[in-house]
Amino acid sequence: MLDRAPAGTSAKDEAVRRVRFRGAGFVPGSSRFGGWIALALVIAIWQAAGSTGLVNPLFLPPPSAIARAIYQLAISGALWQHLSASLLRIGVGWLLGTAAGVAVGFAIGLSRLARSVGITFISALFPIPKIALLPLLILWLGIGEEPKIATIALGVFFSTAISVYSGVDAVPRNLIRMAQSFNVPFATIVRKVVWPGALPAILAGFRITSSVALLLVVSAEMIGAQYGIGAFVLQAGNLMQTDQLLAGVVILSVFGLIVGKVINWLEIRLLHWR
Amino acid sequence: MDLIANHITHRFGELAVLDDVSFTVGAGEVVAIVGPSGCGKSTLLSILGGLLLPTSGAPELRGSPPADSLNPLTFVFQDFALLPWANVEENVEFPLLHTQLSAVQRRALVDDALRRTGLTDFRKTYPKQLSGGMRQRVGISRALAVRPAILLMDEPLSALDSQTRELLMEDFVRLLADGGMGAVYVTHNLEEAARLADRIVVLSRRPGRIREVVSVPMTRTERGDIAAREKLLALQNQIWSLIRNEAIDAEREVQHA
Image (cartoon, rainbow over all chains, first blue to last red; front, side):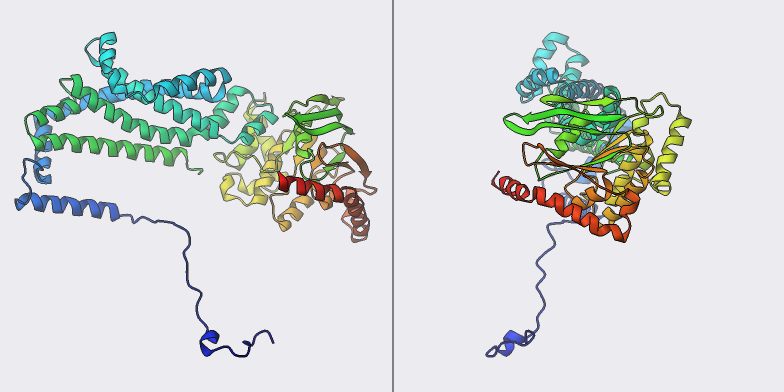
């Protein structure tokens, strides 16, 4: 009889026991409010440390002092003056860099000639810290907005071009073959197959290039600008106005968050099919 | 319109894949291509459909396609090849977008193709929401929309479960019943080949050569009868005996690769 334990087995061997659960793969979930609760907790501890004198407010001003500094900046009009200067540089630089990056990325993804030439140049120039080119760009373009915008555009261009041609490369070849099997013209294949297929990678690239643009605008403004969040943060640091300095940092962080939300919204709108 | 494989030979670098393959698919005829794994069946289909240039020889057409055919040689792919960002209706309309047809004409063709494949109620559904069988129906619907003269089917049922395969096989039998449309049907499944084909081209192991062309001596409608099953089984056994030893060799070769 197969369902009977062999002679000589102990009661322990015959006992029924559950199979131990060993896991269902690493699937970390995230709670909807967990992040916000953690952030509120950190701010509360930070505030308490400042209010009780545990931390010198000169070295780390409490959140309330930073909020006050932002409020004063807003009512004095200085916030808008600095923010508008930075936004203009980021906006124009990002648009120029993105337009050029998308065009070059598509060319590299679709043309053998562009690929062989383009990848070599991008590999050689991409690792250069673009901010190091600012003095040269000032020499070429003069002291004004142009070199700062050009620095941002350069930084954005390389990352965009790389993400676009990687996205084009990742478009399933079977879809392109399918389109060719129906004699669909090249331009329609690019518009209806390659572009939507590459869009996830392109939007992921936008997330990176918006951060690159933010980093470069602050760096460029610290080197040579009268107005802009970077210039404001530098001035505040020089004057030991740490509440003002951190106000600038918070504004940058909020800007980054807003851009992230916009890209999230774009992904939901454009990539709903995923 | 006839499709002719004219002395097709193909190599991938040093690897000889096809060797001097010649046969003709007549108007409205269904020809199945079977053979051991790696014998070049799919390569041959890509060459016949103009998606791959052969090393020598050529695919040729004889005669005119039907006047309303927008794409005489039309593929049905093993992996469906649907645009994931387009819904069913948009996928079926995709090959019509670049034609001279008006929006109303395109709509009529799409409606007809969806009706013939039972997809009318799913026109706004996205591929990811569909089962494998339904996705392949979209692929078939897209192929029908361009009014093909010859369907080029590359193992269209191999990614599907057996029940779905059976249902789609019934669809193929129905679609090909009137003889208005021919097909080249690449498969490793001998039962599918025997159920659907008028003739079965048996290829040798790589480099694929034609070992034999077997005619199926009954109509597709007759093959649905229980009485015909024995004959079909005998036919399958006959083909299997032709390729069995080579299939074993091919499998060992793949494992050693």
